[in-house]
Length: 480
Image (cartoon, rainbow, N blue to C red; front, side, top):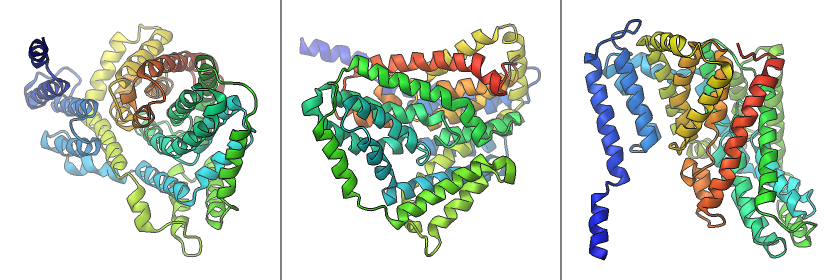
C-alpha cells in the first residue's frame, strides 16, 4: 500500500516543477519577443517590454528569486533587449520617491530604537482597564496609530506580536481560549488593512502615489489621500473587531490581571526619555509639514528627508548611522526602481498606446460599476499568489494604470480601487510574512484564517465600491 502511495506521489509534479515550467514559458516568450509581429500602434520593442515585465511578475509570483534580485534582473534585461538604455533603466533609483521610502524606513528604525512604539501601545492598552473586548479594540487601534510611525506592515506586526503575546498570557486564564485567537488576528490583519490608509502607510502606497504622478500626471497630497482612504480603512477595522467578537466570543467585563499587566509594562518603560520626546516632536513636525504642503510647497519627500537628517545631528542624535544602515531593508528601493523602469518601458515600447487602444475598444462599453467590480475581483484573486505586497504593487500598478488610462472612467479613481484591492491579503498564511509569523504560533487554524479573511475580503470589496461611487465624488474624485 505504501509503495503504491509512493508511486502515486512520484507521478505528481511538485510545486517547484510547476514553477520551472512557468519560468520556461516566460523565457521562451522573452527570447521570441523580438521576432513577433508588431500590432498597430506598438513600437518594435513593445513585445520585448511586455516579455521582460511578464518575466518579472512571474518571478515575483513564484519566488524563484529574491524580489530584489528579480528587480535588478529587470533593470538589466530592458537594455539587453533594446527596450531602454541602461541609464534610462537605472535612473529611477534617483527618483524623489526613493528618497521618501528610505527616509521613512529610517524614521521607523528610530521608533523601534527608542521604544516609542511600545510606549504608545501600553499607554493605549492601559486605558481599557482590562476589559477584553476593549483590549481587542485597543490592539487594533494601536496597529492603526503605528501606521503614522512605521511605514511597513511587517514592521508593525513585529512590534505588536510580543505585546499581543503578553496580553494572551495575562488574560487567557480569565478571558477564555478565544483571547489568543482574536488577539493574533487583530495584530495580523490591522497592519495589512492600514497599508493604504496613508500615503506613507506602506512603501507600496508611497510607490503607487508616485506612479500616479509619473503615469497620469496626478499629484497626491498627504491630506487628500487621507481624506479618500481613511474612512474606508476605519470602517474595515471596525468590521474586523466586530467579526472577531462574533467568531471568537470572549468573556465580558474587566479583568484585574490584564489591567495590572498593562500598568506593570508601562511602568517598566519608566519616564519618557529625551530620545522618545525628541522623536515624537520630529514626527509632529513632519506630519505638520505634510499637512500644510499647500502653504509652503515642499514636497512630501523633501520634508521627510529634511526631518530624517535630524536623527543624526550631534546633540539630537537618536541613532548611529551604522545602526540605521543595518535596520533598513535596502531591497525595497530596488523593487520600486524596477517598478518605475517597467512603467518607462511600457511607454518606450508603445505598450501604453497599444493597451490604451485595446482598453478603449473593449472597456469603454462597460458600465463603471462592472469595471470596478471586475477589477476588485481580479486583483484580489491575483493577490493570493503574492507573499510580498510591495512586489505585488510594483508589478501590477503600472499595468493597471496603463489600462485605466485607456478606459472611459477617471484613471485616478480606477487606480485607487486597484490599490485598495491589493491590500486583500487575508485568505492564506502565504499571502503575508506577518501572517506566516502569527500562524506559526498555533493560536489559529488555516480554516479560521480563511473564515475571517473571507469576511475582510468581502468587506474591502463592498466598502471600496460604496466609497468609490458615493463618497469619493463628493470630495473631488469623480467616477468620470
